[in-house]
Length: 335
Image 1 (tube, helix red, strand yellow):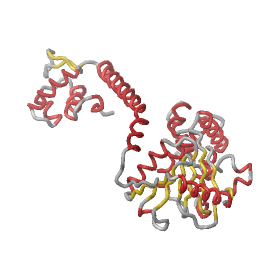
Image 2: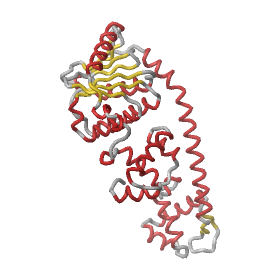
Image 3: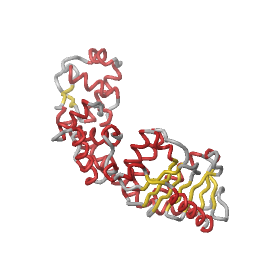
Image 4: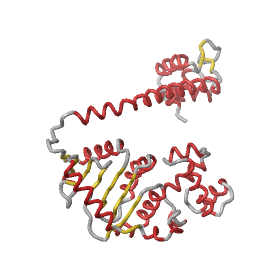
Protein backbone atom coordinates (compact mmCIF):
# COMPACT_ATOMS: atom_id res chain seq x y z
CA UNK A 1 0.00 0.00 0.00
CA UNK A 2 1.29 3.48 -0.77
CA UNK A 3 0.85 6.00 2.02
CA UNK A 4 0.76 8.70 -0.65
CA UNK A 5 -2.91 7.79 -1.11
CA UNK A 6 -3.43 9.08 2.43
CA UNK A 7 -1.72 12.45 1.91
CA UNK A 8 1.95 11.60 2.42
CA UNK A 9 4.54 12.83 -0.05
CA UNK A 10 7.12 10.32 -1.29
CA UNK A 11 9.76 11.85 1.01
CA UNK A 12 7.42 11.83 4.02
CA UNK A 13 6.56 8.19 3.43
CA UNK A 14 10.25 7.23 3.15
CA UNK A 15 11.03 9.10 6.33
CA UNK A 16 8.05 7.64 8.21
CA UNK A 17 8.84 4.05 7.30
CA UNK A 18 12.50 4.53 8.26
CA UNK A 19 11.52 5.96 11.67
CA UNK A 20 9.23 2.98 12.35
CA UNK A 21 11.93 0.50 11.40
CA UNK A 22 14.82 2.33 13.14
CA UNK A 23 13.39 4.25 16.12
CA UNK A 24 16.82 4.69 17.79
CA UNK A 25 18.69 6.50 14.98
CA UNK A 26 19.57 10.16 15.19
CA UNK A 27 18.80 12.73 12.49
CA UNK A 28 22.14 12.33 10.70
CA UNK A 29 21.68 8.57 10.53
CA UNK A 30 18.11 9.10 9.37
CA UNK A 31 19.38 11.31 6.55
CA UNK A 32 21.76 8.55 5.47
CA UNK A 33 19.02 5.91 5.62
CA UNK A 34 16.55 7.93 3.54
CA UNK A 35 18.97 9.67 1.17
CA UNK A 36 17.61 13.05 2.29
CA UNK A 37 19.71 16.04 3.28
CA UNK A 38 19.54 17.26 6.93
CA UNK A 39 17.26 20.18 6.05
CA UNK A 40 14.81 17.85 4.30
CA UNK A 41 14.86 15.50 7.31
CA UNK A 42 14.11 18.38 9.70
CA UNK A 43 11.31 19.63 7.46
CA UNK A 44 9.92 16.10 7.05
CA UNK A 45 9.84 15.52 10.80
CA UNK A 46 7.78 18.70 11.27
CA UNK A 47 5.41 17.52 8.52
CA UNK A 48 4.96 14.10 10.14
CA UNK A 49 3.98 15.88 13.34
CA UNK A 50 1.41 17.92 11.36
CA UNK A 51 0.03 14.70 9.85
CA UNK A 52 -0.47 13.41 13.39
CA UNK A 53 1.61 10.24 13.02
CA UNK A 54 4.34 11.40 15.42
CA UNK A 55 4.67 13.71 18.44
CA UNK A 56 7.46 16.08 19.39
CA UNK A 57 9.24 16.21 22.75
CA UNK A 58 10.45 12.66 23.08
CA UNK A 59 13.84 11.73 24.52
CA UNK A 60 14.61 9.74 21.37
CA UNK A 61 17.61 10.83 19.23
CA UNK A 62 15.27 12.43 16.71
CA UNK A 63 13.12 14.13 19.35
CA UNK A 64 10.06 12.21 18.10
CA UNK A 65 7.62 9.78 19.65
CA UNK A 66 6.04 7.56 16.98
CA UNK A 67 2.32 6.90 17.44
CA UNK A 68 0.91 3.41 16.95
CA UNK A 69 0.36 3.05 13.15
CA UNK A 70 -2.71 0.87 13.70
CA UNK A 71 -4.38 3.88 15.30
CA UNK A 72 -3.06 6.92 13.42
CA UNK A 73 -2.93 5.37 9.94
CA UNK A 74 -6.36 3.90 10.60
CA UNK A 75 -7.63 7.40 11.35
CA UNK A 76 -6.11 8.72 8.12
CA UNK A 77 -7.77 5.90 6.19
CA UNK A 78 -11.16 6.69 7.73
CA UNK A 79 -10.68 10.37 6.93
CA UNK A 80 -9.80 9.53 3.33
CA UNK A 81 -12.81 7.19 3.03
CA UNK A 82 -15.09 9.98 4.28
CA UNK A 83 -13.61 12.36 1.69
CA UNK A 84 -14.15 9.81 -1.07
CA UNK A 85 -17.75 9.23 0.01
CA UNK A 86 -18.44 12.97 -0.06
CA UNK A 87 -16.84 13.23 -3.48
CA UNK A 88 -18.89 10.25 -4.71
CA UNK A 89 -22.10 11.90 -3.51
CA UNK A 90 -21.19 15.16 -5.25
CA UNK A 91 -20.48 13.36 -8.51
CA UNK A 92 -23.72 11.36 -8.23
CA UNK A 93 -25.68 14.55 -7.61
CA UNK A 94 -24.24 15.99 -10.82
CA UNK A 95 -25.91 13.20 -12.83
CA UNK A 96 -29.23 15.00 -12.44
CA UNK A 97 -27.77 17.80 -14.56
CA UNK A 98 -27.02 15.53 -17.54
CA UNK A 99 -30.42 15.84 -19.19
CA UNK A 100 -30.42 19.64 -18.90
CA UNK A 101 -26.86 19.98 -20.19
CA UNK A 102 -27.46 17.57 -23.06
CA UNK A 103 -30.67 19.37 -24.06
CA UNK A 104 -28.78 22.67 -24.18
CA UNK A 105 -26.06 21.10 -26.28
CA UNK A 106 -28.50 19.60 -28.78
CA UNK A 107 -30.52 22.82 -29.02
CA UNK A 108 -27.48 25.01 -29.68
CA UNK A 109 -26.72 25.73 -33.35
CA UNK A 110 -23.70 23.82 -34.68
CA UNK A 111 -21.53 24.82 -37.63
CA UNK A 112 -21.73 21.37 -39.18
CA UNK A 113 -25.53 21.08 -39.11
CA UNK A 114 -27.94 22.09 -41.85
CA UNK A 115 -31.65 22.89 -41.98
CA UNK A 116 -32.81 19.53 -43.29
CA UNK A 117 -32.48 17.26 -40.27
CA UNK A 118 -29.06 15.99 -41.35
CA UNK A 119 -25.80 16.69 -39.54
CA UNK A 120 -22.41 15.75 -40.91
CA UNK A 121 -19.50 14.77 -38.68
CA UNK A 122 -16.05 14.34 -40.18
CA UNK A 123 -13.88 13.74 -37.13
CA UNK A 124 -13.75 10.10 -35.96
CA UNK A 125 -13.37 11.07 -32.29
CA UNK A 126 -16.42 13.34 -32.58
CA UNK A 127 -18.39 10.52 -34.23
CA UNK A 128 -17.57 8.13 -31.37
CA UNK A 129 -18.50 10.80 -28.82
CA UNK A 130 -21.83 11.46 -30.53
CA UNK A 131 -22.64 7.75 -30.75
CA UNK A 132 -22.00 7.37 -27.02
CA UNK A 133 -24.15 10.43 -26.31
CA UNK A 134 -27.02 9.12 -28.44
CA UNK A 135 -26.69 5.68 -26.87
CA UNK A 136 -26.88 7.15 -23.36
CA UNK A 137 -30.25 8.76 -24.07
CA UNK A 138 -31.71 5.85 -26.08
CA UNK A 139 -34.76 4.46 -24.31
CA UNK A 140 -36.64 1.97 -26.51
CA UNK A 141 -34.70 0.46 -29.43
CA UNK A 142 -31.41 0.15 -31.28
CA UNK A 143 -31.40 -1.37 -34.78
CA UNK A 144 -27.99 -1.78 -36.35
CA UNK A 145 -26.42 -3.26 -39.46
CA UNK A 146 -22.75 -4.20 -39.05
CA UNK A 147 -20.88 -4.89 -42.30
CA UNK A 148 -17.62 -6.78 -42.72
CA UNK A 149 -16.28 -9.91 -41.13
CA UNK A 150 -15.29 -10.65 -37.54
CA UNK A 151 -14.49 -7.70 -35.32
CA UNK A 152 -11.23 -7.50 -33.38
CA UNK A 153 -11.21 -8.28 -29.66
CA UNK A 154 -10.40 -4.59 -29.03
CA UNK A 155 -13.51 -3.53 -30.97
CA UNK A 156 -15.69 -5.99 -29.07
CA UNK A 157 -14.28 -4.80 -25.74
CA UNK A 158 -15.09 -1.21 -26.74
CA UNK A 159 -18.66 -2.19 -27.76
CA UNK A 160 -19.41 -4.27 -24.66
CA UNK A 161 -20.14 -1.42 -22.17
CA UNK A 162 -22.61 0.27 -24.54
CA UNK A 163 -24.30 -3.04 -25.45
CA UNK A 164 -24.60 -4.14 -21.83
CA UNK A 165 -25.94 -0.76 -20.74
CA UNK A 166 -28.66 -0.93 -23.38
CA UNK A 167 -29.58 -4.52 -22.53
CA UNK A 168 -29.76 -3.72 -18.79
CA UNK A 169 -32.38 -1.09 -19.68
CA UNK A 170 -34.37 -3.71 -21.66
CA UNK A 171 -33.84 -1.85 -24.93
CA UNK A 172 -35.01 -3.74 -28.04
CA UNK A 173 -31.61 -4.44 -29.60
CA UNK A 174 -31.57 -5.94 -33.11
CA UNK A 175 -28.30 -6.47 -34.94
CA UNK A 176 -27.59 -7.83 -38.42
CA UNK A 177 -24.06 -9.06 -39.19
CA UNK A 178 -22.56 -10.50 -42.30
CA UNK A 179 -22.45 -14.28 -41.91
CA UNK A 180 -18.65 -14.37 -42.04
CA UNK A 181 -18.62 -13.03 -38.47
CA UNK A 182 -19.42 -16.59 -37.38
CA UNK A 183 -16.05 -17.82 -38.66
CA UNK A 184 -14.34 -16.39 -35.58
CA UNK A 185 -14.61 -18.03 -32.16
CA UNK A 186 -14.28 -14.78 -30.18
CA UNK A 187 -17.08 -13.17 -32.19
CA UNK A 188 -19.30 -16.25 -31.82
CA UNK A 189 -18.79 -16.18 -28.05
CA UNK A 190 -19.63 -12.47 -27.91
CA UNK A 191 -22.83 -12.96 -29.91
CA UNK A 192 -23.86 -15.81 -27.62
CA UNK A 193 -23.24 -13.57 -24.64
CA UNK A 194 -25.39 -10.66 -25.79
CA UNK A 195 -28.14 -12.98 -27.08
CA UNK A 196 -28.30 -14.57 -23.62
CA UNK A 197 -28.81 -11.07 -22.21
CA UNK A 198 -31.71 -10.31 -24.56
CA UNK A 199 -30.24 -9.05 -27.84
CA UNK A 200 -31.68 -10.26 -31.15
CA UNK A 201 -29.02 -11.10 -33.72
CA UNK A 202 -29.29 -12.28 -37.31
CA UNK A 203 -26.76 -12.87 -40.11
CA UNK A 204 -26.96 -12.13 -43.83
CA UNK A 205 -25.04 -13.68 -46.71
CA UNK A 206 -25.00 -10.51 -48.79
CA UNK A 207 -22.67 -7.55 -48.35
CA UNK A 208 -24.10 -4.99 -45.92
CA UNK A 209 -23.72 -1.25 -45.36
CA UNK A 210 -23.34 0.22 -41.89
CA UNK A 211 -26.40 1.75 -40.22
CA UNK A 212 -27.58 2.41 -36.66
CA UNK A 213 -31.12 3.58 -35.80
CA UNK A 214 -31.97 4.64 -32.24
CA UNK A 215 -35.50 4.93 -30.84
CA UNK A 216 -36.69 5.10 -34.49
CA UNK A 217 -35.91 8.83 -34.22
CA UNK A 218 -32.29 9.17 -35.32
CA UNK A 219 -30.10 7.23 -37.73
CA UNK A 220 -26.31 7.22 -38.04
CA UNK A 221 -24.91 6.23 -41.44
CA UNK A 222 -21.51 6.70 -43.11
CA UNK A 223 -20.96 9.55 -45.54
CA UNK A 224 -19.25 7.03 -47.84
CA UNK A 225 -20.36 3.39 -47.34
CA UNK A 226 -17.10 2.23 -48.90
CA UNK A 227 -14.98 4.21 -46.42
CA UNK A 228 -16.44 4.88 -42.98
CA UNK A 229 -13.40 7.01 -42.10
CA UNK A 230 -14.72 9.80 -44.29
CA UNK A 231 -17.34 10.71 -41.71
CA UNK A 232 -20.92 10.06 -40.65
CA UNK A 233 -24.36 11.57 -41.11
CA UNK A 234 -26.72 12.02 -38.15
CA UNK A 235 -30.18 11.86 -39.71
CA UNK A 236 -33.35 13.09 -37.98
CA UNK A 237 -35.40 14.09 -41.04
CA UNK A 238 -38.69 12.12 -40.79
CA UNK A 239 -38.82 11.26 -44.49
CA UNK A 240 -35.24 10.00 -44.64
CA UNK A 241 -35.66 8.19 -41.34
CA UNK A 242 -38.73 6.36 -42.65
CA UNK A 243 -36.63 5.13 -45.57
CA UNK A 244 -33.89 3.85 -43.28
CA UNK A 245 -36.44 2.06 -41.07
CA UNK A 246 -37.98 0.42 -44.12
CA UNK A 247 -34.54 -0.65 -45.35
CA UNK A 248 -33.61 -2.13 -41.98
CA UNK A 249 -36.93 -3.99 -41.85
CA UNK A 250 -36.23 -5.65 -45.21
CA UNK A 251 -32.65 -6.53 -44.25
CA UNK A 252 -33.86 -8.01 -40.96
CA UNK A 253 -36.60 -10.00 -42.68
CA UNK A 254 -34.17 -11.48 -45.21
CA UNK A 255 -31.46 -12.29 -42.65
CA UNK A 256 -31.19 -15.69 -40.95
CA UNK A 257 -31.26 -16.51 -37.28
CA UNK A 258 -27.99 -17.58 -35.69
CA UNK A 259 -27.29 -21.28 -36.35
CA UNK A 260 -27.48 -22.30 -32.70
CA UNK A 261 -30.87 -20.59 -32.30
CA UNK A 262 -32.36 -23.32 -34.42
CA UNK A 263 -31.41 -25.79 -31.68
CA UNK A 264 -33.10 -24.70 -28.41
CA UNK A 265 -30.68 -26.78 -26.34
CA UNK A 266 -27.74 -24.94 -27.83
CA UNK A 267 -29.04 -21.44 -27.12
CA UNK A 268 -28.87 -21.57 -23.40
CA UNK A 269 -25.19 -20.99 -22.68
CA UNK A 270 -21.82 -21.10 -24.44
CA UNK A 271 -20.01 -24.44 -24.53
CA UNK A 272 -17.20 -24.95 -22.03
CA UNK A 273 -14.52 -24.48 -24.66
CA UNK A 274 -16.08 -21.13 -25.62
CA UNK A 275 -15.85 -19.54 -22.18
CA UNK A 276 -16.13 -15.78 -22.55
CA UNK A 277 -14.02 -13.01 -21.05
CA UNK A 278 -17.01 -12.10 -18.92
CA UNK A 279 -17.13 -15.68 -17.53
CA UNK A 280 -13.47 -15.31 -16.54
CA UNK A 281 -14.26 -11.94 -14.97
CA UNK A 282 -17.08 -13.51 -12.93
CA UNK A 283 -14.79 -16.30 -11.72
CA UNK A 284 -12.07 -13.81 -10.83
CA UNK A 285 -14.46 -11.63 -8.82
CA UNK A 286 -15.79 -14.63 -6.90
CA UNK A 287 -12.26 -15.88 -6.24
CA UNK A 288 -11.43 -12.45 -4.77
CA UNK A 289 -14.30 -12.80 -2.28
CA UNK A 290 -16.81 -10.40 -3.88
CA UNK A 291 -20.46 -10.77 -2.95
CA UNK A 292 -22.95 -11.60 -5.72
CA UNK A 293 -24.29 -8.05 -5.60
CA UNK A 294 -20.83 -6.49 -5.99
CA UNK A 295 -19.84 -8.92 -8.75
CA UNK A 296 -23.09 -8.25 -10.65
CA UNK A 297 -22.42 -4.48 -10.56
CA UNK A 298 -18.85 -4.98 -11.78
CA UNK A 299 -19.90 -7.23 -14.67
CA UNK A 300 -22.95 -5.13 -15.54
CA UNK A 301 -25.69 -7.78 -15.19
CA UNK A 302 -28.49 -8.50 -12.75
CA UNK A 303 -27.83 -10.60 -9.64
CA UNK A 304 -30.28 -13.18 -10.96
CA UNK A 305 -28.42 -13.50 -14.24
CA UNK A 306 -25.07 -13.65 -12.43
CA UNK A 307 -26.25 -16.54 -10.26
CA UNK A 308 -27.48 -18.44 -13.34
CA UNK A 309 -24.07 -17.93 -14.92
CA UNK A 310 -22.28 -19.11 -11.76
CA UNK A 311 -24.47 -22.21 -11.68
CA UNK A 312 -23.63 -22.97 -15.31
CA UNK A 313 -19.91 -22.44 -14.74
CA UNK A 314 -19.93 -24.73 -11.71
CA UNK A 315 -21.65 -27.40 -13.78
CA UNK A 316 -19.08 -27.05 -16.57
CA UNK A 317 -16.25 -27.23 -14.04
CA UNK A 318 -17.76 -30.24 -12.27
CA UNK A 319 -17.65 -28.31 -8.99
CA UNK A 320 -19.98 -28.67 -6.00
CA UNK A 321 -18.92 -25.40 -4.35
CA UNK A 322 -17.74 -21.98 -5.46
CA UNK A 323 -14.37 -22.57 -3.81
CA UNK A 324 -13.96 -25.80 -5.76
CA UNK A 325 -15.03 -23.98 -8.95
CA UNK A 326 -12.36 -21.34 -8.39
CA UNK A 327 -9.67 -23.98 -7.85
CA UNK A 328 -10.69 -25.91 -10.97
CA UNK A 329 -10.87 -22.72 -13.06
CA UNK A 330 -7.34 -21.85 -11.95
CA UNK A 331 -6.15 -25.35 -12.81
CA UNK A 332 -7.57 -24.99 -16.33
CA UNK A 333 -5.86 -21.63 -16.78
CA UNK A 334 -9.13 -19.63 -16.85
CA UNK A 335 -7.89 -17.30 -14.09
